[in-house]
Image 1 (cartoon, rainbow, N blue to C red):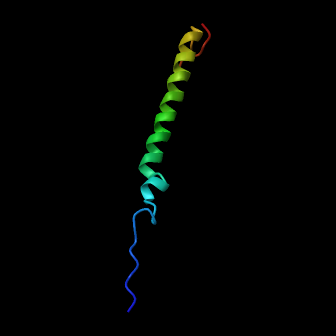
Image 2: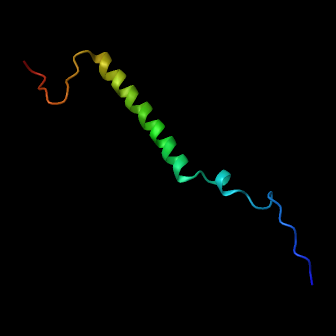
Length: 59
């Protein structure tokens, strides 16, 4: 006849704060990937004579 011990929220960490959800991880990965691609596109544009897909670079 022992009363149940009271469980507080501090005793049990919330899963959402302890580990990011799959959606959050994917969102962060997509953001990083888009930033990387943007930087690559800027660098390619600064080179000047960038070759497009399907073009040969010789004339």
